[in-house]
Length: 478
Picture 1 (cartoon, helix red, strand yellow):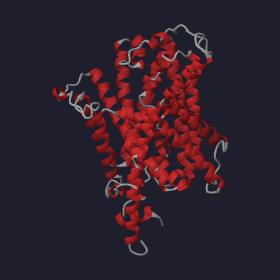
Picture 2: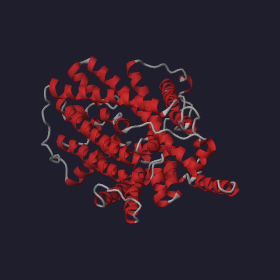
Picture 3: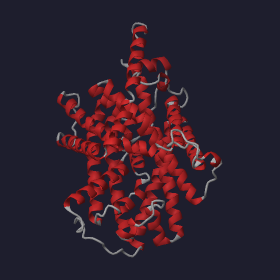
Picture 4: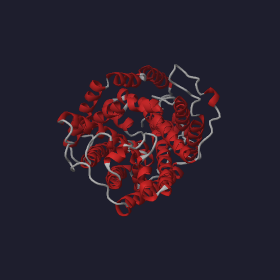
């Protein structure tokens, strides 16, 4: 019954449910806690907000993210298939809405995240061991005057190598990738805990520069609100990735029970870590000292160096490498399942629905992710692309809230949804406000982002036509 079984009947191979609730929880925490925990304190200090309001931004963004987790947990009862948001939107609104999300994830969100994380990992290594640039003679060669594929060639070559290596790990099996994710997430959390202890117990407290939870006296209410919204958007980027667990629902044991538990537990871990580590940063260095850190330096490394010297800076640099490596592995693991599910529904390249006969992994979908991610690494434009679609991501979050309201009203969600319907209405209101604000303040970037999302329209109609042809030619009973 349904496309997934037709494919399973043809290939005789399905994905294996390899993840328990512990692995699923660590997967959520591991994806969310990436590079932002080490880097965001500097731009936040530069907003002019007081220490209290900076911590309030982390707390509020965490609360909104937790509301999103409650909402997604409600939708998780709809299906036990992989695909996550793609599958929930398909069941709630049909193929068009789900395809636009899946296409946006493939062209920008998921693959650009892989490219960005690979690049950040290589940049971090470059700070410890300067990498050679073998293609430097061609560094000024450009495509369109803004893409320089041979610039920073050493960093890009290493980034592609790391992405290839982790793709191979994911190719070898979900259990292997899940174990690797557990190890690196555990090491990451242990390292951040040590960083928190250094800030809380080994450093002399920095002098307070502004009253806690008061707007800066030198700014008007309007500029304060603008500064807080800027901080909030910056913090949201650090919380990004919490939805990724839903993409591997088909590989989670007892997903109806374990997916909601892991989502809430993973996000809660991230909230606690973010609040504690940022409080530790603020205890070591004052806001003016943090704001003065160079864009080429990492805030957490400067904080550690001020307490432990060069050894502290080196330790944090290694911790960032561990953190980014683990997050990159988890992103590769989760996002490829969207394209796998799209292909099962005949709305992506058909071979992406293939499952490896021995390793039980969507190895062709992994291959598509690898190729496009590496091209984005060479282009060097992935940071711009991800910035352009942040507002589009919140559009889809708004659609998910609408999906819960619709499916609950139709009786297709029978399980209890925490906070229903107030959580859904809150998410809808916030998503609409954020989208309108982005359109008004950044009209050019927003229109480009919408254009990139809509670039999938020709492909949608192509896949729809091909699906109709396949169904009409299929043998009776297939």
